[in-house]
Amino acid sequence: MHVDYQSLRFDYRRSPDQSAGSAARHPVVVVGAGPVGLAAAIDLAQAGQRVLLLDDDRSLSSGSRAICFAKRTLEIFDRLGCGEAMVEKGVTWNLGRVFHRADPVYSFDLLPEGGHRRPAFINLQQYYVEGFLLERAQALPNIEIRWQNKVTAVSQSAEAVTLTVETPEGEYRLSADYLVAADGARSPIRRAMGLESKGRSFRDRFLIADVRMKADFPAERWFWFDPPFHPNQSVLLHSQPDGVWRIDFQLGWDADPVAERAPERVIPRVRALLGHDAEFELEWVSIYTFSCLRMERFRHGRVLFAGDSAHGVSPFGARGANSGVQDAENLAWKLALVLRGEAPDALLDSYDSERVAAADENILNSTRSTDFITPKNEASRAFRDAVLDLAKDCAFARRLVNSGRLSLPSTYRNSPLNTPDEDAFEGAMLPGAPALDAPLEGGGWLLDRLGRDFTLLHFGEAAPVVDGVRVVNVTPGEDAQGLAARRYDARPGTAYLIRPDQHVCARWRRLNPAKLRAAVDRATARVPEMAAC
Image 1 (cartoon, rainbow, N blue to C red):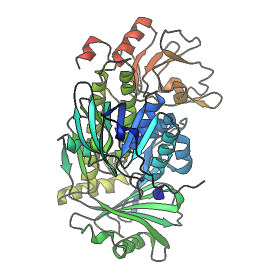
Image 2 (spheres, helix red, strand yellow; image 1 turned 135 degrees about the horizontal axis):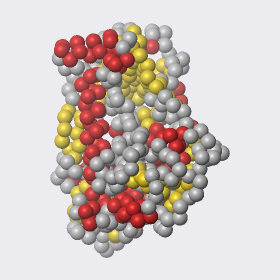
Image 3 (cartoon, rainbow, N blue to C red; image 1 turned 90 degrees about the vertical axis):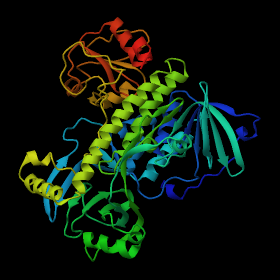
Image 4 (cartoon, rainbow, N blue to C red; image 1 turned 135 degrees about the vertical axis):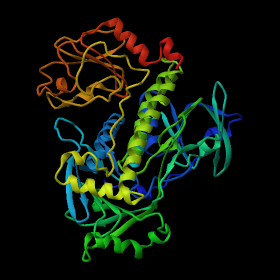
């Protein structure tokens, strides 16, 4: 059944907290019902926590906004219980093409090998992502959602964080053990706490046009540098569900952001790309500028910032929403353990250190992409055009082309939660790396087996028995294609300790129960050196 998520409106309802004589206490409050806030709330609820989710609006997003959702994010959505619906609705793609002026330069495959459950990317309008997440949240009895509840003030003590919340019926107060601020780039909570994001703003403007049309373009990412239909600028084309195509036109800093939204300015640009006989309708139009910035720290006492409230990047590379959802997954398992009393509060400091490093990686890549796409002087433009000309025939030059280095999950190489290797390993599955998927005999997938707990992934015929740790054993017969063993550089007896967010935190060639217990303690901040971090 088709649901028009853009037209949904959610009623404000008075809560018992508004009649309480004092601030009602909640274990965790999440502010912001966008993809990041919804993902955090669902993850916490699935871990057994009661969650109060506040949003100052009464609707989901409109227009495509974030549309590219990466393989790692889809795997997170699988664990949240809504990945299948998103992949079924979304447009799957792995291939991208780069053009310079009228000529194709080269193409690339973001998932060149098989044996993965999920594709490199799907394109899916943000309102669908929010809609599927919302339906999942509404199915969980321990999530309460309050619409038209706007946080206007925040204070905290050593024991709690207290919020002032504005509603159509006036203000009320509530308190929480922890507050997750997923309230967007303009973050009222960040402002209320006197905090700021710092970074670099880019002097350029881009037009987004969602266009409904019938087209025989393949489901690929097409990027033009200096095309004849839009000279001296860049254009990006993506397919979306429902026969809608997303077109991004670079306009330049001098473009009038109001005038350029007018249909009489947008339609000729679209016709220049599609041809004068093309039939199409404009669905949504927006003008954007962007910055690459972040807060100095994402944790401030009992308040934890996630997604756009904590960091912002340019849209090139699909790093905004993907990194925000990965923030939510990184935070949720740690916060759940702390709330259950199974880990010290110091574990939350690792959220800050790991995701600040991830934000810096995204900002670096996003800044480089923007500088290549929008050269600000003739020397930079000459270098870019020379690289594009060389890339037609020379593979080495293609590594220099940057139309947006597409989102990849971060590897937490320097995380205090990692146990350093004692044995020699090859490949990508070092401590801190996100676990790779692989097919198992009978149609199953490795990541599904790993689940959402601390798990010992053991390769070999006999699974060890380890007190307090869930064990997944992969035998040669189950790994019939040998992909799991190859991706994990595994031989009989190899063991990996996988965190609840499915990042590696330790690995051994031969399991030692005492070392396993020490690794779990380290990964949950239950060791003296972690408590001091």
